[in-house]
Structures are given as C-alpha cells and as structure tokens.
Amino acid sequence: MAIGYSRGQQLRRIVHINEEIKTVIATAFTINLMAMNAIFLAKRAGTAAVGFGALSDELRRFAIDLQKQMARLSEMTYDRVSTVTALFKQARLNQTLESTVSLCGGLGQLLVEDALQNRLNGALMDRQAQCDALNRRLTQMIADIVRLVEAGSTLARLAKTEAAYGGILSVPLTQVSCDLEERISEIRRSLEKLTKHHLEESEA
Amino acid sequence: MKTTQTIFEEGGHKWIAIVRDPKRPDYIIDTNEYLIVHEDDAILCDPGGSEIFPAVFSALSAEFDPSHIRALFLSHQDPDITSSLSLWLEFNPDLKCYLSWLWPSFVSHFGGTRKTFVAIPDQGMDIDVGELRLRAIPAHYLHSSGNLHLYDPKAKTLFSGDIGTALLSAGEDSLFVENFDRHIHHAEGFHRRWMGSSKANREWCERVSMLDIDMLCPQHGAIYRGEDVKRFIDWFSNLEVGILNS
Image (tube, rainbow over all chains, first blue to last red; front, side, top):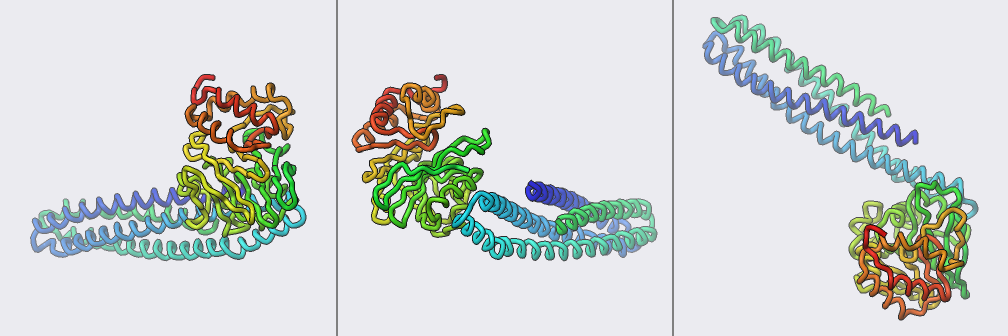
C-alpha cells in the first residue's frame, strides 16, 4: 500500500507540473500578442521608440521560444507518466510475488525468490535507470527555461527604460512594458512552483 | 492458501483441481483452476486473477513444478481468468496462451507479447500437451462472445469455464456435486443472467452430448461427475437464458 500511495502522489505531482506548464504556455501566448502590439505602438512613436521596438521584437521571439520549450517539457512530462506507471506496475508485481514467497515452501519458494531476484536485477533496475535519466533531462530543461525567462525579464526591464524615451507615446509604452514585466513575473512564479513539484518528484 | 485435489490420475496423466481458499476476501469471486498434467508437461486452465495468484501458485507448486507448465488455456477474457498472466510469464516467458481469436489484443493489456498468444478459431482446435491431445470445444456466447472449453478424451473430462457454475454459500463448498437437485438451485440464477443466448445454449448441449464425459469441471463451484453430467446438460438445454429477470 505504501508503494501504491507514493506512486499515486508522484502522479499527482506530475499533474501539478502539467498545470504549471499550461499556465506558462498561455501566458507566453499573451506576451507574444502584447509584444506585437508594442511593436506597432513603437512604429507610431517614430524614431524616439526605435530601441523600444527592437526590444519588443526580442520579447516576441522570447515568447515563441518559451512556448516551444514548454511544449518539449510537456512531452517529457508525458514520458515521465509512462515511466512512473511502469514502475508502479513493476512494484505491484513484486508485491504479489513477495506475498507468494510467504505462502510457498520448497520448490515454489525457490522459483519465486529467483524470479524476484531477476526482476530486481533486471527489469526494475532498468526502469529505475530510465526514470533517473529522464529526471536529469527534465532538471536540465527546467534550468534552461529558467535562464530563458531571466533573459525575458531583463528584456522587459530594458523595455521599461526605453519607454521613458518614447516621446509623445512614452506613457502608453511604459504601461505596455509594465504589463509585459508583470506577465513575465507570473511565469517566474509558475516556474518556481513547477521546480518545487519537480524536485519533490525527483526525490520520491 | 488454496488446496489441490487430484480428480483424475492414470499413470503420468493427471487432472489437479486447485480449489477453495479459506483466506480469500469475500469481495473476490472464488475460482477453480485445473492443471492437466501429462508426464513432464502441463497446461493450466483458467489460471485465475492476479489477486489470488499467491494462493494458486503456492498450492500448485506443492504438487507440480510450475516451470513445467507449457501453456495456459483461457476459456475467455474475464479478469478472474486472465489478470495473473504477467505473473505466470515471469516464470516462463515462452509460455503459450491459448484463447479465442477474439481476445489476444484485449488480454495483452494484462501482459504477454505477440508470440505469447495462440488464437483458437471459432470451430475450436486440438491442443497438444506432450503426447496428450486435448480438444478446444466452442462455447461462444456462453457467456463470452469468444468462449471455449477444453476436453480431454482420455480422462473423459471437460473443463467447462463458466458453464456449470454455482454460487455456493459458505459451508456448501464440497468439491463434487453431492445432491444435484439442491445444487442446481445455486446455478440457476447465474446461468439465466450470465449466459447470453438460448440458441448457443442448445447448440453447446448438442455438441457436448456427443462427447464421452465423466466429469464436467466449471471455473466456479462444484464438479459434476457421473450421471450428474447428463443431468446438468439436460437441465441446461431446457433453461431459458439471456434474460434479465429470473
């Protein structure tokens, strides 16, 4: 039962990770639209907002990259569900075989003990190794995404500074850059939660 | 733990019934498993669900080396028959699993690979266990749409899957039917509801009436023997089945 409960918790944590992934993808989509508006606004402001326009273009690329990265992370999380489910199945088979050992004597006991040993040295170890490798890849990918979002955050801050030089449109440009900064902060908060769930999941 | 009883023995040819687990939780239906042994080879009929695997395996291994089981015969696809498949494959990954052609892709959700399953055609087929030749007998729609029984002409014994099942109450757990008239009351409701077709019912009765049967061994309940086999077939042929209210 303890194993089943723990695997159930693992699956629930993966569900939480997926929820955060969906939130980040949706927010990145919004940032993409906001950055497009910012580009048009910058064009209307003329030469005074050239820097703001360039930064908005970068923010748009950032949003597209982030959506792609999150989609890859989502695929890897799906693989994680498969691996955890396979481990769950293996653990259940082992539990049944352990119950069988406790009932058997003689030849039956020897056969089941052999089967258990083979499983522990073979299938279960392979699955665990797969699981660990996937965990490492997920950790690396989350770290890459965190770095990407840091870069996005810097772009938004710079855009806010550039907005001050936006001539007659500096007020709406500042408003847009503040909104972009706030959206990126939302993404950072989601990534913090996602990282926490992932770390708990890796340690399980 | 379940107990084993040898219900037929002639030289190296045996039928071993694996039955009655007093420790079985009451929310799990009781099942009978039958091991047909011929010299060093064996086939296990309806190996049971994963929840009762420890009880079946431990009882069986006290009588016979489980690594000599060459094949499983599955009368149909229900979980109380098939869900232990992956556990049996742990002991012999080359184990063959005979069942109706309808079910391999469904039962493989419990385990096995493409090479595990031997699909039995609708008309049945011969199955060899060492030198012993058994015959898979069609029993479609009784109750499953792809349903087969296993006949051993040498032992004159028919493994009849769910046909003959009686849901016995506690204390009425003898291995053989002792009083047919009393026993059949426990079988009536089950057969009326679980068996899907009166036409299939009559055809099965005609088919098995032509076989020489000393024992009719269901997956649940007690074994019919001697005159009770004929009594059961007569009773079943006149039973209206496939109806909701009995």
